Image (cartoon, rainbow over all chains, first blue to last red; front, side, top):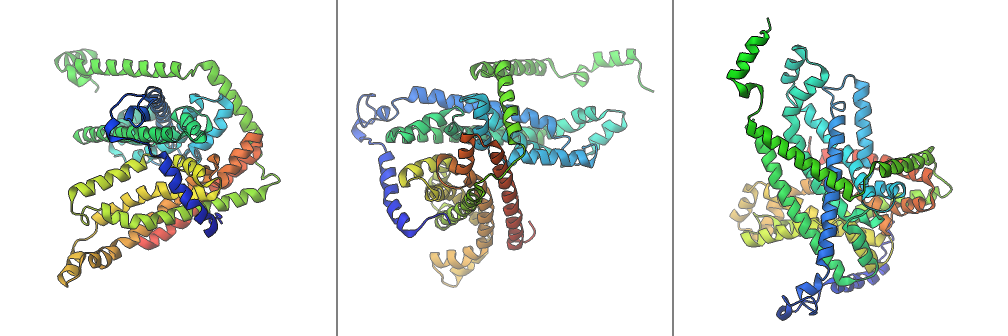
Amino acid sequence: MSEAYPASLAAGLPRIGEYFHKLAPTLHWRLLFDGVTTEGSLAYWFYRLDSWSWLLFQTVQMAALATFGGAVAALLLCWAAAANLAPNRAVYIAFRRGLELFRTVPDIVYALILVYAFGVGPPAGIFAIGLHTVGALGKQFAEAVENADMRPWDGVRSAGGTWAQGVRYAMLPQVLPNFLSYALLRFEINVRGSTVIGFVGAGGIGQELYQVIAQNYYEEISAIVVLIILVVAAIDMLSERLRGWAMGAAAAT
Amino acid sequence: MSPDAATIATLRARYPRAFAASPRRRATRVVVGVLGLAWLVALLVWFDLTPARLWDGLFGLFKIVRLMIPPSPGAQWQDILNGLAQSVAMAFLGTFVAMLIAVPLGFLGAGNVVINGLAHFSIRRVFDGLRGMDQLIWALAFVRAVGLGPLAGVLAIAAAEIAVLAKLFAEAIENADTRQPEAITAVGGNRLLRIRFGLLPQVAPLMLSQFLYQFESNTRSASILGVVGAGGIGLQIAERIKVGYWNQVLFIILLLLVTVALIDALSARIRRGLIGVA
């Protein structure tokens, strides 16, 4: 079905080796720390480090803004999508299915469509990632709410608190650390997603990567990929720390 | 019998912390809030997310959505079905190839098989690093290496999946019961026999279930690899967006949702059968 016939596979495999061999930078041990103009030095490999770093920074900020926007929207929607708080079953099902719809469409597909609505550039990417995030986080948030202790809720309600007050004073304090931890996890995923969202013209480092791959600037491809891997790993570690802190704060209270 | 205002005032004076957070906490809150707001405004300005632009974008989106309804399969519905089948096949093949490679790698990455701490640690870090690379990057690279078409997609899925599966497998192996490999050693089995008869039977159902789970997730991602030319339904979506057949785009998206839901349900049933009630 996927047309992976032995013949085409046999023809393709050596080309893979060749391609990845070309991607590898030519580095010479002796010249490793020489200036930008010396071929074979690290500086020569990463000769546009400044503009790439800036683009990567932009990419991470896109992911951060999209995660923030998505988390705020999910925070507003999740209460009605939780079975224990929704006013009635119809509302619950409507919100759940709605969030599911947002979640199932991949962010790249949103980006493809939004590039037509917002034009080429970061806004399309931010909205694309944000839309997917609303669905993903909304579902996780709603599940956290469903697992929350209902006794504070009953207390607030029986003391005459409204539904909104119950959400604010009985539920939110319980689930906030969970929400924070899910949002951070989603941020990690979104950073990964935002590095490729530029492939369809929605901003960030992806646009640059698409260019260099399309034009076969072999060493630049590997340089950018190495940078992406480093940044993703760094953010993963940072967010893991923060998540540990958020869950620790939850355990302390 | 709620207390009168005077009682509340005296209580507030006597126990300020019961009524409000400490001044330091309040100051931290204000500072964090202001910094957060500044960050938000700076980003909005930087990305040029002005209300006017938002309005234009939403208006454009509204127009697109109106063009999408009603969804229609269009004249080339056979291409759509073909692409869909191709996506599923790509996901299956890619995940399968990845599993073949990830099983030995998983044993190498497991702390109870490779005792050497440094080796185990560095193998794990390599998996982590590779996972940082999105599938689409692999796809784009493989399209350049082996040409347009599903083969690039299969390779991209396999390449990205190896690291994920290897990590999951390594964790499964580390959580396996140690008594069975010990028994193999006790009857004189060497290392290889220990892995084959002591560990593999324990982790095989788990591995299969993780394979199915990743297959589900890869069906989703295989549907977009075509955007960069790596075969599958993504190509059909991208082409129809380019020529503005929005109602067909919506049809494909809906079809995709149904297919993914079907595969999820099917694989969930098989997984339940494999590892008992999960």
